[in-house]
Image 1 (cartoon, rainbow, N blue to C red):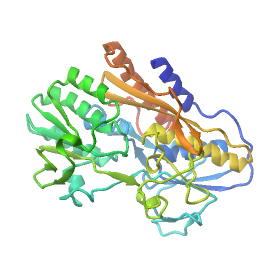
Image 2 (cartoon, rainbow, N blue to C red; image 1 turned 30 degrees about the horizontal axis):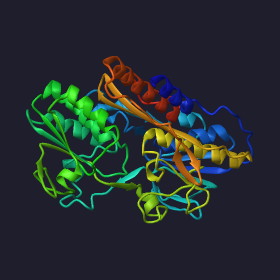
Image 3 (cartoon, one colour; image 1 turned 120 degrees about the vertical axis):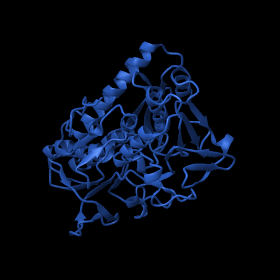
Image 4 (cartoon, rainbow, N blue to C red; image 1 turned 45 degrees about the vertical axis):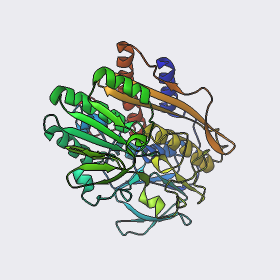
Length: 428
């Protein structure tokens, strides 16, 4: 199984091998420099070298959500998950370091925060990620992300949650509020609980972790629970929505109130419901549904021609909202745009997702799948899902932990063209 998964992973991360001739200079603008946007920028420039490719992204570097739980748990320095755009720039991508204030999808115009003249383009690619939505939870406000950090966008929030956990009293309670589907990185809250439990086991062994969940099931549930029982017996309590009801409010004393229970926290991690990034919802590209509908064969918006949307912002079920999904979707999008620029036939769409999670630094689990288009829909290829087995031995779990790190090195090198701010291994 592991050999097969590594083959699937490698088949996606190897750059596309065919060459394309250059033509006129069409303009391509990508908004958002994460796994979707950065991958799209690099691959469009590679496959259509004549195109003028611009990446609109205010940050000088991108901090990845993958491996940010290792930072939360004190196992990595945040610089080791921070990647700059110099590799893309060296490949010919123009980095415009400002925010996109708004867009005109019909005219394919991008209005920048710098108040310069709007950017016009022939192809517009949007990869805006997520917006966090606190509306349904009473007691939340502008200070909530400071007091109950979500750490679901990596960066300052990641470090704040880490600091709070380090300062938590001995025998304290860490409450994680996990949202209902769909949301970014489905196994993320449970990996976070696992790695924090490993930290507590060494530094705060009487501490307790409670996961207040808005659902009754989660990805790799049986594998996570097997690992918790083996590594952290009695430390992690998972409370499903059918048992406790919906999270209704939080108060200034960090008490989480559901329909039936109260959960006082010494440290609270409130991960709220989510929707597509504001730039697409405000432009109406989500159709008022919170997530954007796209043609699964090329990720062109169903509401605007020559406008493509990638990653967490789209409804691409059954593909999960993950870094690997965004990276795959970006390659499909790039190949489609390049084919249109170069006058070549479009390719058949196949995509993959491999999701690794760490229960401990030497304990990995995974799930993978393959997807294709059928009847204008994205579907899972029959019998393609592959999940780590229950009851595997220590060597197997250690091997998957190693593959987790191999996967991270491969996907970040592929996305950011092997450039980053510091060595991958520093602080690992």
